[in-house]
Length: 351
Image 1: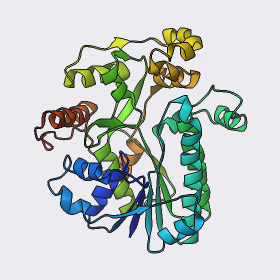
Image 2: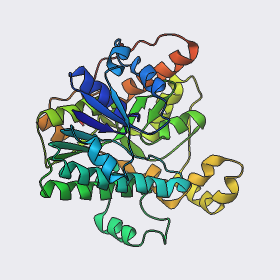
Image 3: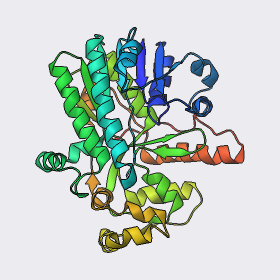
Image 4: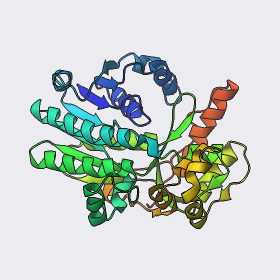
């Protein structure tokens, strides 16, 4: 039996689907009240056997803070894919992002060791690869006294990785993946792990930085392959190619039939930051103008996939192929048409 946390999320649901395709039995964690009909519906974007696969899932409500319940959940589990996370760059979500990313990871690791789980995969983030360790440790020590530095999501993944390495040293077979910006789909909307492509649809503004991207389907197949090959005690960046945000915004808006994006320079964001509380009364996006978020969207986060390619035979979708597929599905859904889910072939990249 395989346990997947965050199984209704952008990546977790596709890892579940890949495991089912491989004939595995899957126990999928969800929150009470989760819209499972939306998950079932989203599978139709990825396979012609959506209902058959979905009906094989054992869904379970989970309370990661209840040790007894968590231990019971792992009774028959031999592998864990830990995908659960709160992804948000809204300052109001700071505490929830940290609690979900840190406390949940600590508890599932402790339970996995206690129940003798054989394999554990942790989904981190490529953003962790770009941190300055000394600056991060200083920020963690002084957290709560400043809003400068790294976003809470990145902090949570950094601390999560430290806990996973500790569990590995104590005998748990673990592996970490660090995906770049994940581009994927829910049933009724496209989605990404950074929320930026969605912002490019709602607003014409784009940013001066760039990032390495990866399709959700490629992250899922990579995760399953690493576990199948029993590759432990390592972490692997996972990315298809590096893309400037202005180019990404242009691709997204072209597929959506919208106008060209407008570059919002870093210096303008810094000028507007002191007035963000007032501006947010008129435009909700203004509250995101924190030092940490401005630095994040102005940075150039390149990720190399060479280490992974030495272990696995990888061919990934390009950013353009991913955007056309996922945003094309969104448009097809809105028009009531059936999207072509097999119209794109993977392109080999040297990233």
